[in-house]
Amino acid sequence: DAKTTQPPSMDCAEGRAANLPCNHSTISGNEYVYWYRQIHSQGPQYIIHGLKNNETNEMASLIITEDRKSSTLILPHATLRDTAVYYCIVRVGPQEAGNTPLVFGKGTRLSVIA
Amino acid sequence: DGGITQSPKYLFRKEGQNVTLSCEQNLNHDAMYWYRQDPGQGLRLIYYSQIVNDFQKGDIAEGYSVSREKKESFPLTVTSAQKNPTAFYLCASSIAAGYSNQPQHFGDGTRLSIL
Image: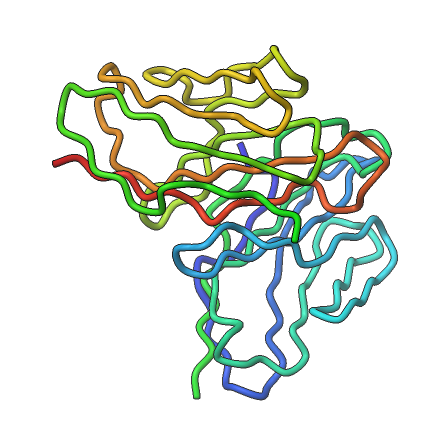
């Protein structure tokens, strides 16, 4: 079973920041938070991951609370092309993961509205 | 460009027939995976293979079979024993631990429908 809880759906106005929450209250000390997104009828696309520090890349920012029990993915200026299902996944990090599968929950369906 | 190729994009099958979905990767990745996705649901793991000539069952392996004779190929056969095969099938691959921050790369899927 997925170790994360996400709202089933969210709306965001085009050009505004989209803030997608994720609860992972049972996260272990060596587990990372990964985010993927899936645009309709395509394969999931990696976005970002983090352990305890906030992370930023060209796609998004990841804010992890100090107790690591929750996190927020931020798309700073959402566009219509960001409409997708966003998955928050908890798993051990790249140094020790080996080739073990990801476990997906149902994710959050983000709709960006013009 | 390197990536994962799934073919065909759409596939139709008559009841009682076996059908094989293709997945090829040129990323030189060690591991490959098959997931199934039903409408409005997340991905569920069918089978995965960490090295050539070896594979493990996932959560929903019944009615499916795989082979891993080559590093770059991991075909999935949906057998007649799979009672509800209509779904979106996704293939993924990953490199060994420590070599990449991205756990898995995905193909664009094959949508299988029963006639």
